[in-house]
Image 1 (cartoon, rainbow, N blue to C red):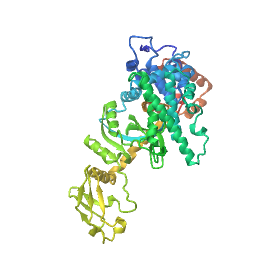
Image 2: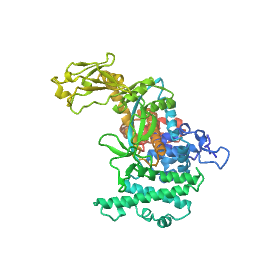
Image 3: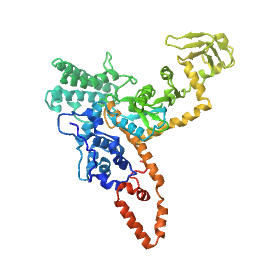
Length: 582
């Protein structure tokens, strides 16, 4: 049942008694001062049964605790401890000093409900709504967005094929043992799978000569045979279960990763199974987190996990959209969806979207053009292994002609089935050409590919070569700065298994990044009025003793007055933020 906080603040709540001690110009003080604005209990009513059960811990309090947990980057148990004993947290939560507001499991269950109900972005949305209330978008009609991605390292352990198979076998054995109400080790030993449930690494405990190719193949054959035998056991067990029953679904889910590893990493041959050469497309690198993927942010930077995508308003620096992509996804995937999400969450239309060259491919440009949206992104440089690249040729799409660096013209455009085409220069033209050694290495004539979105790419190249493109380089840096802030808040390493939970982590980090921007904006006007400490100290030292005593007595009386009567004295004696600049 939904538990709600009363509208009236208590006399003995920590923010009433210790807000000035903790500091109004801290993030904790900001959360305390705006407690009723940021989160309301009714915003989370959909997570609760409104008629049955005992009243819950108010969800507005738990949402604030999740914000603090992300801000301080602590575990669930540490979050419980700080909510119980840390004065800064108690002030931010607005609870009495002697109250222990929630258990570790309560915070876990609240987060789980947000994920299960696909409300991972609920707190993130509230951060944008608060920014709108505080005037961050005041007077704006159109937004300029900057898009980018960063890698998120997966939570699951990345292992080689031998240990992946062993982990997959262990997962299936555990489910079978649970359904038979047996001990895992006893059940595995009886079925001949004992070596898979003892020790952390099957490969590490195998007593074979790893330099001997024949020994490796024999060991792999035995492991694959065990996996096949276990999958046959799963099929037999499922035949006795009702289709789509909880037990049937548990077996299907457990056997899935094992079957996937066999398919992607093992090549069946007449003389026995072998490890497949190369890396299979969409390869599964971890059995414990099946949604992780091998990914690259560059030719040299490889990772295993996911990609976090963010959209940032270049003027306010607010993060307006987040998404988690597979690690092997292209950066430009869901670019248009990020723009649409921004418009849904902010209520403002986007006039321009800025990205790096990863967003400058032809299909993405076409998608934006079809949606009547403006995309600004560099076209990736074109190379041709030291020979003249395509950009050295002048392609006239309207005139259906192509002029080479030697000023020879080809009108032989041969269309392709999927769009675009290829210009061909005659062998007789290219043969005697003095630039031939710089243009092509074969014996025939030069060919020039025409992209299906050639017109869009030509326009983009012309724009990026003009002075008008320069400001966009500066604007794009805003998203890089915001990504750096998200990395500070811990998104480089996933805290959870599964893409939906990683999305929650990213959305929480984005919410905290937005809230700290709003908090800084609220604090800056006060900071501008603060007297320099050194100047104030000098003035006090120069006063006669009686004047200093009178000043101290006046300051003490003002400190005991209602808050609205002693704003200026508080400004004169600023308290150092617990985390300067947040």
